[in-house]
Image (tube, rainbow, N blue to C red):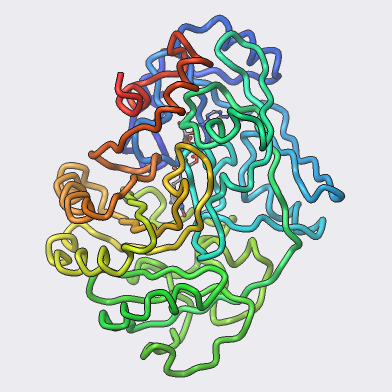
Length: 402
Ligand SMILES: Cc1cc2nc3c(=O)[nH]c(=O)nc-3n(C[C@H](O)[C@H](O)[C@H](O)COP(=O)(O)OP(=O)(O)OC[C@H]3O[C@@H](n4cnc5c(N)ncnc54)[C@H](O)[C@@H]3O)c2cc1C
């Protein structure tokens, strides 16, 4: 059977797909393989997870969720999804500081690509990682903890350093949020971008560069009937205006647990358009947000024919070498495209050109054509831990400039 990613736009070229069921078996497999890569839940839109050698799916590995209440940390198996992890944490009185728009993705795959949600004060999901355990090129295990020299290179790693088996994540006390959708944000309200984005714990703008809606996730009620000239949505909304909202987390200001409000999509429904889409996202320094959005609005007529919706999010800085947020509070400009690669790629190039003056770094798990400079220290770490390029693929070779 042909193995593809979630969207079906990428076919894997692996000569064999393996499903080890123990760390020992995984170690033997990695040691014996010439070229090997791990697969998460397959939600990336490019060839980042691909290999022409051995592809390792961890779906038969033991699942692990060990909560250390005293340390406010959880040790979790790489394959575990946020959908599985979050309710267990909540039941123990804990939360993760942030989640992505869908919970169906694996922890290891998400942090490997720098996956993030939104929130001025909240960094990407990888910033919660305080420890990482992996099987390296010769099959030996390696554990790295925050504070160790190589750690900041090992978390957002695009799978280039080894097969991650477990991660330790920082927890915060469980919390509640209300979710509101406000419609009709006028383009001139972009002048209030900073106030709008800081109006909630997590705020997203959904726009087609003509009509803009604000999704606010916050603790407090939002009662202002004329908030920045918007009107409250009169019912639940889907990020894609034409879609029914059944798959979306509860809105209309009803308070609920963090993990049932932070993701846009419910864990018990297929997310979004269920694979009928492509995605691109460019991450820019926060200070360029308004200028960058104005530049995109100016070419909106050329973006719209292949656009389903754009989402604008904010992400706090982290210190992980390959993270698009390394050392910079950021804004993410995301594009959900129609599923037509040939029609979409010229428009990806257009948005890359339009945003080029603002120092964009692409989301590693989405479609892009312009590669940023790879940080030297990440390249050096890959060459030291994997001198023969066992975990390399076409994606990492371009990234590393090989
Ligand atoms: C509908 C949809 C919504 C999305 N929403 C968001 C969003 O809100 N925010 C956002 O930032 N992104 C979002 N994404 C992108 C998604 O989060 C990333 O593509 C993420 O990497 C997916 O995780 P995965 O487990 O599917 O990883 P995969 O795509 O399977 O793999 C990604 C990378 O991780 C590596 N990897 C996976 N497991 C391991 C392991 N055990 N050891 C070593 N390396 C490993 C792979 O080799 C590959 O390089 C979305 C994607 C979809 C389809």
